[in-house]
Amino acid sequence: MDRLTKEQRRKCMQNIKGKDTSIEIKLRKALWHKGYRYRKNYKKLPGTPDIAITKYKIAIFCDSEFFHGKDWQIVKPRLMQGNNPDYWISKIERNKERDSEINKKLTYLDWTVIRFWGEDIKKDIEGCVEVVREVIINILVDKM
Image 1 (tube, rainbow, N blue to C red):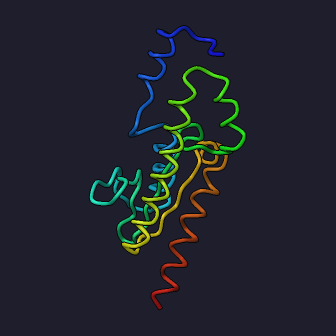
Image 2 (image 1 turned 60 degrees about the vertical axis):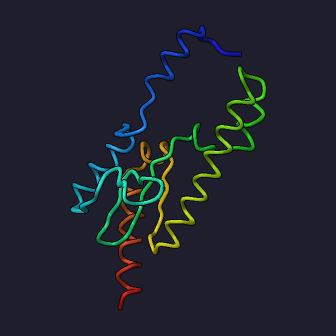
């Protein structure tokens, strides 16, 4: 059961942003500080990656746990008990399908896809930057 009124929930949902979220900004600042240059919300690629390091063909997505279905087998039964379960379940399942389709399209175009969960970015930003650094090293080694 929802603890907010319909009007309160509506206002909360209207404030959810699709671009320049706090997790994206945090990761971008950390990458920039380490010297990695990128394009943000790069529309020339399928799925418009949150961060695209074009020099190395790396597409980075910063996914929120709820909307992209982290721990879906645990969350799905809880959604069944909430308001409008059919809408939320179909929406999140479609988001998961779309994420998979985008990964395949980008991989076909020879781009490396990295997806970070929002909590991972919040809790371990250095670890996320290290993942990007390791991917870049692997790309450079493969070119040799």
